[in-house]
Amino acid sequence: MPNSLNVIDIEKLLPHRYPFLMVDRVNDLVPMEKASGYKNISANEPQFQGHFPSLPIMPGVLQVEAAAQLACMVILSAPEYSSGYIGVFTGMDNIKFRRMVVPGDRLDIEVQITKFRYPFGKFDFTCKVDDELCSSGSISFAMQEKAKL
Image (cartoon, rainbow, N blue to C red; front, side, top):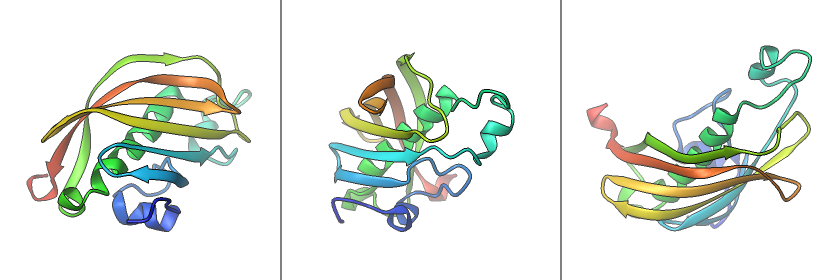
């Protein structure tokens, strides 16, 4: 598994597709530990049609989703989870939103695993634009076998 991933590599790990794929590039990936990556925020994304037409702001929940997708790649890049699994949300804690994210921004995302005992885990995350904190918190997940979905 390479240390960095482009969108083609990302689509091999995640089941998400446009318009719900929220990570454009992974800069640094350490399986079962951490990752950093980013999403380029574009004015033509569908959420901006209604959130808000005169002041387009990336919804905070989509920032959390971007972090969750990056976190999933940390687990799914490990050999034991690389096929037949998907990560699903089980919780969110201490989520804070500190800055608006708007078209033209690059949302830089970092995730760090804090707990993992199959099938449950937890990550801390931060999202930044130009080194300024936009959102942060902890996300919990469970690994689910695809056959049981």
